[in-house]
Image (tube, rainbow, N blue to C red; front, side, top):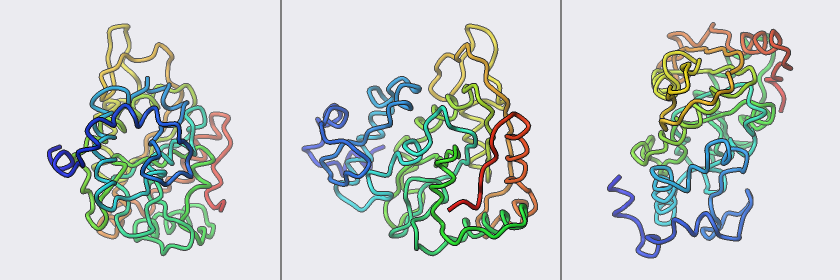
Length: 281
């Protein structure tokens, strides 16, 4: 964590509380004066994580870096996945690694790029499997906002990245926060499918919720990367799908032919949920 500390401007050393209390709010605020605010439903579910360490320090370090270098996605999109998919609507979790690091790509949703941006190789392979699996034509756009609005939480394990430097923010501590998110989601009452592409996603999931999706039983049990007590509310039905990462380096080792989209919809329908419209733009 020494890198952000060294790069941090002096005037940022006392702004941890200010970021939570600034009066300027909203997802469309792109000024460096705007606080980075987790949507209320998620903030309450996670017991206000950015009011305490280590989560508050991660946010402070990332924000400090964004003031002295180009960081993706833009600050107002760091919590876009949470803004578009509130906890009560989560039906699918697709877990990525870190944001795209090239200009105009990252938008705060794992694997998604903005309208009009060329599809990255991983997303092209995801769409290729979508077409084969469902016998449909994939969307022309790589913007997956429509998935998020239907309850697909497109979550990266690391939420920020320095421009041109893949996985450069892996030491900031975002994994503590996203691990707590996975643990909390695993305890929600509704049916939820988890899609874990690649070993890093699978390891992050196992670290957050254990090798079993079910929360350990008993009032003294602990679970989740934040070591918080499990909710007495029993989790709903779960589907966990694993496959190699969709990048060109690994896609042919298993994601092609894995049929995740049809499996997810069959699971949701089995439990009385509306299937995801994967081609909706």
